[in-house]
Picture 1: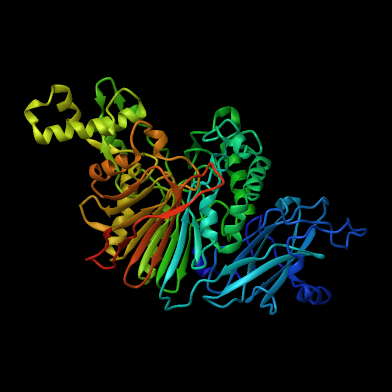
Picture 2: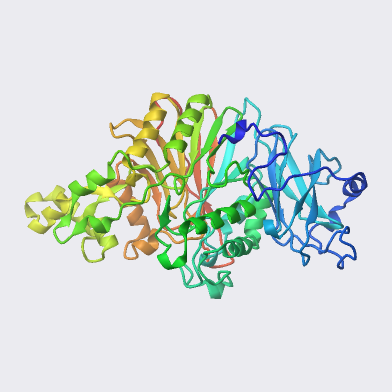
Length: 580
């Protein structure tokens, strides 16, 4: 599963959706060298008269690159054409935007069986180099994309933009637009929920009609045709197209690429009358690989590693479907007598509970042991840091009226400090309840699995930085194991467009809520619970920093961008904690 050490020969592919390249014929080589920039993005000419002639095509879904290595990168596009036969698509890579020199070229065939998508592994490139690429069918030329290979050993700086939870009907993808304007990124990471599977009446879709962003197809996604059509809709977004054409993307899926709260054998949003879940999952993953610039090793195993010049080892994980056991449900532990702490503790701490699964866990341990990079970075979906909050607050959020708000709890806690003798029996009972994980879908619901990863990093003396998405909110936390040792840090990105805690806690002031959570949750050092955006993570030999970029709105075309204070972590046993 290590993308950086694949034994496949250059230019070869595995997986049903990847297309095998072939060299261009001599006659086409002459044309490709002379293809001018004026043709970029143009529509095809009239339908051809022979099956040997190029058919009419357009490149309505843009171009993308991804999974860069030091000597290669995956290039992606899709053609739109009225024909039903196979179509040959040429491709070119150049070290200059004008394509005065061509360093790699070839052609691939696509057809309806691939949903007209095109994916090629462009090999023979130079490490740490920027390249431009384009696709060609006859006289029709795609938009030009820009990409970059991974640096050679000795890299002095690596900079990554990190995204999660881009919900088309919830709002505009301004976060993508902001990142696309930058000229200093080595890669973009997408940590999942690249799309959402709901129908038009589903989650965060109330304003979609006014925004002109109604989901297509209008139904919940169940079939291959459904998932393909939803991917196609997302790829029409101009901001997504801009980001995809500006920087290579390294992506993993989360649950909504399949169905809400997915796990190894099912999902919360999959019902018995919706057919075989395994078939639905297979369809979703096939469409994902067709439409994303991923290098497929095995269709259902997306974990892989990337070595950024010996400075950063990026290990992309699947915490969602490969090995995840079914999430616990708090409804089984809250009752009329309060919270069943003993029953919950036994369940969440069961040694057999898996999140990564045995195969992926072994792979990760091997990668951490083999890599000598300064920073070991995990790109994955859900929060790893401990996020325990008082049970009465969580009870009130899950079952309104059964507990207290954050503000009410804070007032009782303040009263306990100032005048403990004045506490009522009810207030004493509230303070006596334990702090428990707020989200059992995260690593908090898989305690032994988390300790396994943290123990591995600690035993190997690695500088661990975990990147997370999923929650729609921004977080920065110290990673502390069960024995109280600081093992590393976690930076979590807000969503691109999905709503955050401002909808979960509508009666709380976001600034007050964030400050209260930082006070209540021991490892938590920073939170923003109401703004959308992305993270910029920068690694050097002496520190790894994170800056959050926020957009002022996602439901209006006009917006402004702002940044958070930069937080950092230093390497070594004396570091490995969040610092300002």
